[in-house]
Image (cartoon, rainbow, N blue to C red):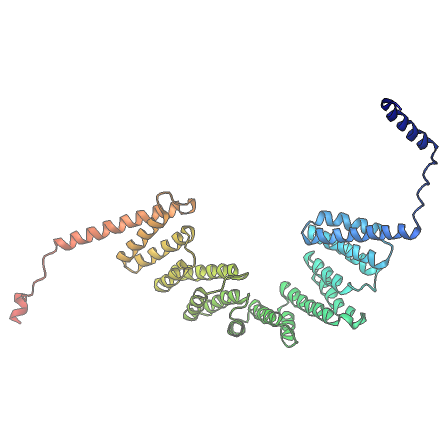
Length: 399
């Protein structure tokens, strides 16, 4: 056989066989069970997407996923979960009206939903944000009642939700000025079996309620006890700030100074609360130091300004505080100390001071020049005075 004709003959045979072969059988239609599983998987996927988006703070896209999940839901729990996700997404978006409406729709149409206590709790907070404290309190009470109808398998979780609802009731009374009820609820919480953090929070809020009610002496006692029991609690710096202010209002300035200096010298370990401590240290120290300065109590003001200067090493913080230190030293007639302070400001500010420090650096330089001139002038005047003589005056000698 001619080799040149072999390949075309082979191709012809293959083509002929292909045309002779029967068409492939069509694929069998998917069974109803497989279609159902695919739809269920799609709904579950939408819910997972919504949960992930909501957790990441992307409320707009979470809302889209939850809406689609709610529209395609077939089982009651699927619909309930999607509605709860929608309500939470609306709340995160800042649309409290739509959030409240969605919570109400969920609670009305799905009364046996396992997440009913959480939904009621969140609805109460939403109503409070909308300026309806009475409706909010009613919903918080409903949280407590709703847990009685639910299975005991998750009793511990429901107990935590109930305690949170009790906190929210007390917080709402405090926010609306109903201090008597707020104090009663916070004290009642203190008697419950709470986690240490919750108990501390209840004690702090009780003291805060007493201060807001105008009972200053009781508030001083409550804040003092709280600080002694919880010196490193996250609310301890604010408690010291409030205590220092109350003591000042009661005329107990020495006690107020002691509390403030104690706060400023508190060494908080680095962590999530360290910045909170620094914020309250600065606020408390500044407020009381400025009060002392305005009232002419320069020694006390100087103590606080010096303590404040140690809180931060940045020029933006130290230059204003040191300028106040220099002013106090001038008022106390300590010119040499004031000149040293103004020289420190000049060094801190440098040749090109930060924009926040330009004016203070200029004023410190001016005051330094004035002090130097006054000191030099006084020295010249003292040099013109006749020397003191040890020889008694003639009249005195005659006597």
